[in-house]
Amino acid sequence: MEVIVPLLVQLIAGGAGGNVIGQIVKSLNLGPAGNSIVGAIGGIAGTWLASKVPGLDGLVGAAAGAAGTTGGIDLGALVGQGATGLVSGGILTAIAGFIKSSMAKA
Image (cartoon, helix red, strand yellow):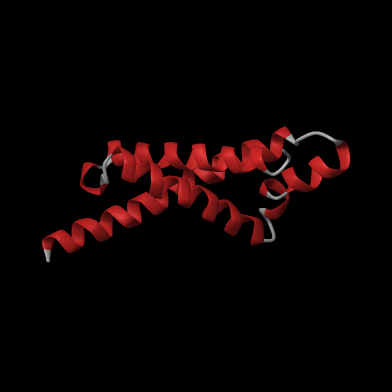
């Protein structure tokens, strides 16, 4: 259970970030399903990447470690993972949308 909750937070936040970028920048829009899928992948990948950065590892990587020791889930770490998932999901969706639009022009 301690592993599932952070993953769900990352998936949902990443999908939301992807959909926000798709709605704001119409040229990068992959459609609702595409934005959600790419954003969810970006949410998980970006949070994993942020956990490897020395300054951010305590913010996003503490949820699983704290859950095992205290019997609960660290709310601060979940918020950090959600914020990281939101941003990284939006970034990956923007990259994928840019590649799609560039290939359509060629």
